[in-house]
Amino acid sequence: MSSVEIKQVIVVRTDLQMGKGKIAVQVAHASLSSAEIVKKHNSSLFKRWTLNGQAKIALKIESLEQLLDLQNSAKKKGIFCYLVQDKGLTQIDEGTTTCLAIGPANSLEIDEITSELKLL
Image 1 (cartoon, rainbow, N blue to C red):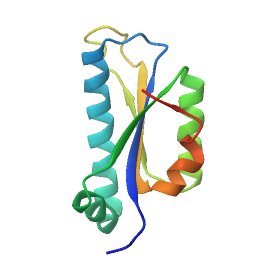
Image 2: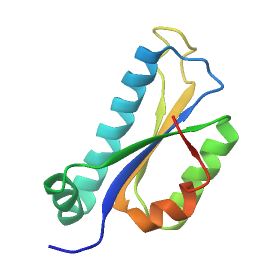
Image 3: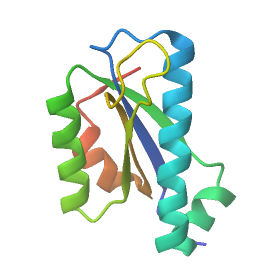
């Protein structure tokens, strides 16, 4: 087993004023979808993450532009990610981008693009 720590980060937009339940559902959607992408494209990384407790951290961000910048930074590093766009059934309009899951991936690589963000 490798000593490299693996984690997933989910970044949530706070400017949308979503309720706690809405945030929970959006984070779950992001986490699962990004994990499925990693499982498909890098099954050994996914397995290491799963066997080591599926570490996750929820962070906050204040705008769509910042969220998209994070997504671009993750993609440039080759880190798989998933951007959630809401269906518009409750609280927010259809197509609104609510959060971004980054990884699971090497913790140090994720930290390089998310270390300035605060916990949700």
